[in-house]
Image (tube, rainbow over all chains, first blue to last red; front, side, top):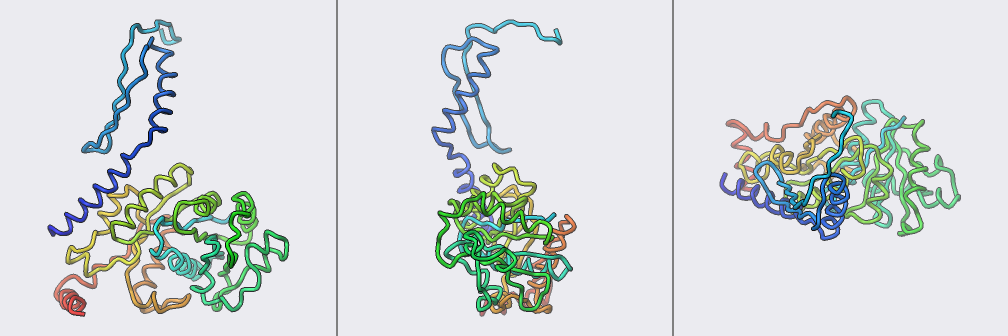
Length: 78
Length: 261
């Protein structure tokens, strides 16, 4: 039983590290696209920071950025 | 309209061609018209596993270069009227064959067959992408070991980007005795690890190794492939239990005999 669960853990670890292996191209493209979206709503000076980490329920994706001002606008709902 | 299914794996030697042939045989035994297409250019073995290598006159390349019509290149199975194979080139001319050409050729089979099963090459190179681009569904063949599972996970993530109708797992060479003894990763664990729907469990058996095209009705693999074919046809999820033979009192005797061998 111990051998089996050790083997499963090993497979899980290998697969997890492969899945986390995100290239620089992916990160750059995502941050660029995300910035474009964010700039419609916020005034930002620096690019957002993307952080992906393994979590109990999968992968936790954290995107953080600083804003100087929220861009005010009225929508149809308002 | 034919259902076009690609059989892929990532890692070589997991039994893609064997699965393609035996699944084709099982589907044809349900009365369905089936074509097996070998897209493993240069390393083509579908004709050999089917046992029709001596009857191959034309291949895919001849169809592309206009030396024959598609109908002339199709080789009928030795013992089934509704099962055909389309062999691929003996020499690797794959660089000259575009995905678009292959796709158009497979589209031509739509009205004639119920299932077109495509045997993809190992790896994730051009040949793999060419094979996947022709399909509506994908079957990823894995064996219960680390290397195969790792490669399969990468293949599954690539397949997701193709937006296929369905991507399913096929576990090949499952050893019931080792699963009961907890020395082999169980199919349930594999399904959880790869987060992909499991459609078939195929046992490791000498009969598969010794057969050339048709399995004996007495062997477990025959039943496993029949269950697999029914799952594909009806959209069900009935899995062959490789462990039942090795559970209980008589099962423990079988296990100890296998262990000593």
